[in-house]
Image (tube, rainbow, N blue to C red; front, side, top):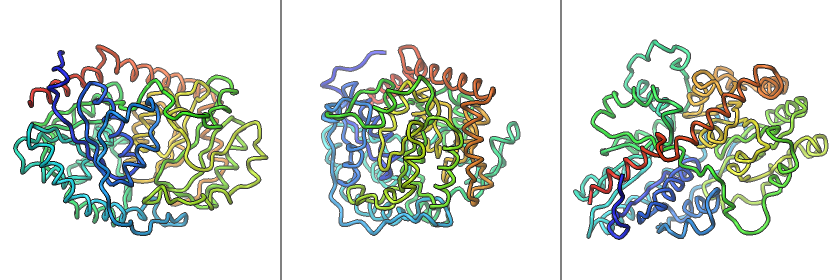
Length: 463
């Protein structure tokens, strides 16, 4: 499939939703398109563009220089302190932040659409949660709009059934079983306020046919997707990790270098999870009891502005004697950790995760077995696909027990199922094979490679 000359390539504007798992996926995809010579514009608040650049892993330090970042200034964000004792695990403290950011971005983004499309056609790629930019783009004939889904086709399919009140498919009752209260009422209010549906001519999904081919095909037949092109271009994150920052490596990577191959459990619950002190103590007991090597990232959920997160006061005050008790067996990282580097390391065998799709794709792509502990949103459905459909992991905490404190013995039991028990050998083998298939799909002739080329060919014809 041929490419047009670089000087004739159509400009692309990328508009992410201002949350880490969304920023990260769209910046990775922007860099991927940039590597094919497209002029990329990445537009968000100055706060969230800084966050996306600061946390970027896997690319060379010069890669972001090929992208034009539109750092849109916004007023001070509302207070956004996470509550470790909240009734629901959803990061409700961030909803006022998202609301404020979207409100203040709309006018500058509308102006940017007009300026970038004034002399040539423009490709717009936006997160579905930023639907207002899709509505504004629909008023400009020279703009071609595509949505970038940060959740898998399977979860999007289930979400479509739930919103339309259609009966779930009966061919797999476990996968499509009801999962109540994945999001609190205030998030649904937020969603309706910002009008989730907006026109587009195609959808990009950070997934691969080798992961969920039957669900991709089924999703294409749903009313909302009929007539739209679906491009499954995942994984968008790098599969060969390059040091992004100059200077010394993170200490946890130095520790990993000294561990045996495929011996370490990486434990991290993402950027939107805050756990109670009691639950953290139980996790510590379970890790200690398991006698397995581990890296545990102990941190609270993001605040609205990560540059003002302070001195990690709570993280530094928790489990102060735990580090000494597990010395030689595991380490605790208090604060941000280089997740992609950890998962790509040869010593990492398994990943205990909240199952945000960004983390799922990174873990599966690197061949890690998954210990699933979903917290909210798409995560419970993602966890079901990993454990019941792909069978490359085990459930740490069942969704129906989401309001309970999980005892340490259950954490230990889940780790042993993957790292010690006979059945764990098969799980790790399937995870390794899946990782190989995913990586193979990004090479010439692979499904994700061909899907990316198909998208590039499609948008090149818009000139």
